[in-house]
Length: 230
Image 1 (cartoon, rainbow, N blue to C red):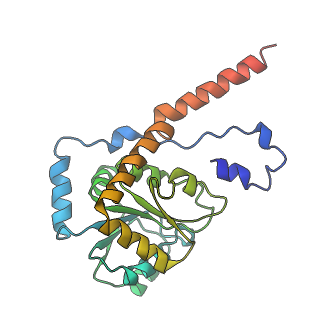
Image 2 (tube, rainbow, N blue to C red):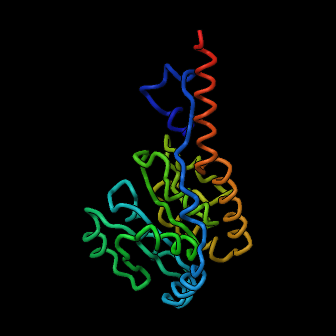
Image 3 (cartoon, rainbow, N blue to C red):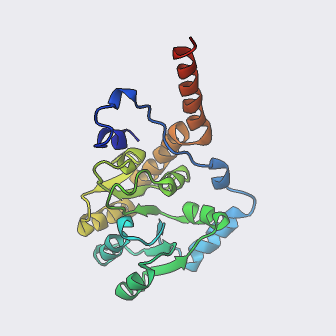
């Protein structure tokens, strides 16, 4: 991402030599298939049709899951927190955060993940350090028209993938009360939330699909061949 380039100490003297090509997503696996609408309906019914806040990722420190779970107690609107994935912090987090609004899903298969993305009202992405360089699942959720909430991470590509007030909301790093306010804002303002989701999908289609990224690679190769053909 441009931010990774900008904040890299090792690359500070080579900025003019760098071409930024982002990660890509496989949009085909995210398109709804026959029968998916019924699966989405059933998933929502499983949680009494309450708004779904979805997290997907490894349960490690830089993913910031504890800050998402800490924010739950400040969220005023009725909703459920679905926590996908697992990792070394899973048991600790499950013991520490036991609200009836929090549901632990374990690993979600690719086939199921598409359903969860489309069923979610908000995709929560609470990573806190630039170990999170990009956020492929962030882009996948955005392609499914799901608005996102992120923390501000200096030097990470996360806040370039999802743009504050355009495709999602961004709040001060580790500020759980502000994160909760962002959740409540999206849950209360359906028109704004839907607008963010639509713009999120358009951003991914323009920048992060396989076709969009492959075009960038092709242009780079052609530029290199022209420059060095002698």
